[in-house]
Each structure stands twice: as structure tokens, then as C-alpha cells.
Image 1 (cartoon, rainbow, N blue to C red):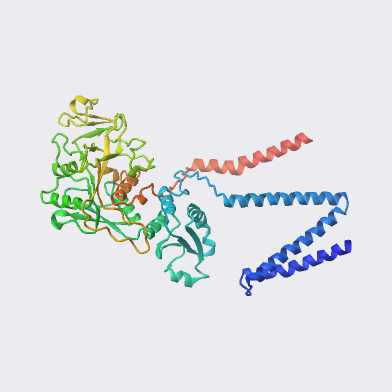
Image 2 (cartoon, helix red, strand yellow):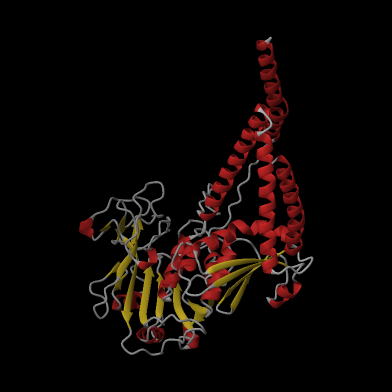
Length: 530
């Protein structure tokens, strides 16, 4: 019996030594190995290993007490390894991660999640880099892949497969290509913001264009990138695949045909008489308009822009001359939006704080246009109020609200929208992109008004919700509800700065105190045992 087992053990070793190299040569493409031969080699390897294990167990059992103990110890180690393998297998199928970073930079944003879960066709993400550079992409790419069954990720070693890189016009290491419905977009970093921007452009290939009205003292879209500039807002427009340009309506004498929306950002003087019919005609045909209207510069002079305010009133939005006070003695002219926001597509699941500076009331006005009432989407807190009697208003001696004088008690609406279906669809809806099966949305006139323009300047763009609220409003106007969400966060740079004294303390603690404490504890334990 023992002799037969010896022969089986040697047979098992021979099978393993023959079958294992066949599989290894096939893995590394050293020799061509068919799929069937590779499968047979795998079965043979397991069979040979089983024969060796049977021989080892029988020998240990027949070798006396010490051998049995050794066999039990070996079996315990094997069982522990099997449990670890099983736990890792289950963990790989049930992915759960915790992100403890300050701004959740390793958690995919709502915008990315919404895009991935709304994909109607398979999307492929290809990472082009050296093989040793793939690790910095894997955590992020695994998150993208886990959120949608339509997403697959492929890693391409540029050094081994240069023809594949040339096929996708890859010019540098670390390039990510998003391929969707034969459309390809590229990102050159591993940041979620850039990868999601490429995904947006691939899913929504048609570039939309917004025009910033100019010539009335509005904020300059192409101005310097200082605190009062709009570079943070325009960068966000680019990431959502928008183009932008200024529009001097008095010179153009027409709204451009490619205008997705018109933005009026903080005018200082009113529209000209000949400009008003152009905007009215544009809106009657399904145009989109965003008006960000600041309080009057001279609070005692009344409303300086009756034409623009009158245009909003025709569509059911009133903007009384007013200034809102936050109710706080520390910063009375900088109210924050109250959470939760009113129910509206723009603020759906929107839990970020937005802060405004010198804001006026913007309120729904009755039944609106053709029975389509305006809806609020941003309001200030319950302790705030809007001063409407500006002739008696003194910013240096703030009085409590007085409803009898027309003051509007909080919460005060500072953002409202109205949507009115177009009776005669002119122009016709743009045809869908090739391969896009989604039906075009029915044309609507959409107007949004916000009682402040400073909230999107670079000075306040760092407030978490300000730029997100602006972009959600623009996407609602453009009838791109799939892009209404909270966008990817910029990675936070967090540093610890130490002076010379603190550096000396850290050095002393790590080099002297900790080693001495460990040595002292060991010496004390040795002394006690003696």
C-alpha cells in the first residue's frame, strides 16, 4: 500500500511539472497554446497537486503523534487561508468603500453618478499609460465601472501596444479616452472632473452656446480673472460642454440663431426700447433667459430698469425694488439660502449652501403667462426680510421689519422660474445626434430670475453651492435635466506647516522619546521577570 502511494506521489509531481509550464508559456504568449490544451493543463495541474496532498496527509497520519499534530497545524493554516480567500472573493463582489477625505474627493459626485446610471448604450473607458502607471487610475475607474453595467474599463500599455494608442490619437502617457456610440473624448488626468467632462461631451456631443448680454453695465464675461470676474462660472460652462460669448444686442439687432440661452448678469442700466422687442420675440419662439438682477445702485432713487423688470412681469415674475437683510448683525447684507430649498428640478437633491451679497426679492406673480405660474427655487431664511421702502432705508441704522410699510417677511424668494410651452414650434427641435435614440424635448419658453449677480463671481465662487446652482439653472434652461446635479469637487490641498520649534519637537519625539519608552518598557518587563 505504501509503495503504491509513493508511486502516486511521484506521478503527481511529474504531472505538475509538465502541466504547469504549459499554462505559464500560454499566459506569456511564448508559444501558441490552444484554449482546449490550456484547460486540460489546468485540470492536470490540480489532479497532480491532489495526488501529492493525499500522499502527504497519509504519511503524516501514519507517522505518529508528532506527525498528526503537524498535519492538524497544517490543516488549520490551510483552513485560515481558505477563509481569507473566501472573504476576499465576497468582498470583490460586494464593493463597499469609505471616504474620509475632507471634501470627499474619492467619492464620485452626483453628476457623475447620474450620468453613468442614465447611459442608454455601452460606454468604454480606455486608460493609456505605462503598465506601472495604471495603479493611480484603478480606484477611480473601479468606481465608474461599479455604478453602471454599461461601463467597461480597459487598460492599454502604450509601450507594448503603440498601434492601439495611435488608433485613438493618444499623444501622451496618462490619457483617458471615453468612447460612447462611436464618439471619442479625451482627458489627460486621473481627476474625476476631467474624466466626467469627457463623458459629458461624448454623451451630449452637440455643443450649446450661451450669450451674455452686454452694453448695459453687465459683468464682463471676458474680463480679468479678479474677485469680480466670472472665470469660475465660465470654466464650469466649458466643463458642461457649453460655449459662451458676449452679445451687444443694440449692434446685432437680432438674437443669434445658435443661442441656447441669453444671460443678463447684473446690468446697471435698463434695456433700450429697440432691444425689448427682440427679446420678446425670442422668448415667444421658445427662447431661454436668465436674469440676475442686483438691487438698485441708488436705493433711494427707485427702480432704474423698468423695461427689464416689466419683461419679467409679463411672464409672471415680479422684482420689486428691495434689498434683503439676513437678520444677522454681523453680516446683514449677505444672506444665505435656506435649507431645504423649495421643490424644483434645479434644486432636486441639492443640499449645498449658497451665499448671496446685496440681493433683492424675486417673486412669483399670480397666474403667470397662459396659466403657467412661476415657481420659487431659492429662498432666504425665516429671520431675513426684504426692505421695500428704500426712500427711508438707512444702511447705517437698520430698523426691524415693518410689514405695514411693505416689508416682505422671510423666508423671502430670491430665485424664481417659469416654463411655458410654445404653441407653434418655431424653430423646429434640432435633430438628435447620430445613434441617439432619445426623443427631443418639446420646445418651451423658460425664464429664470435671481436677485443677485455677485454670487457667481470669483469672490463667492468658493462657496460650495454657488457655481453648482448657476450651472443647474443654465442646464434647466437648456432642457438638459440630466446634467442637473452637484458637480465633481476640486481636489483639496491640505498642508501641515511647522516652524523650527515644532520640527525639533517632532524629531525629538520620533528619534528619542519613542525609542527610549520602548526600551524602558522592555527593561522593566525583564527586571520584573528576574
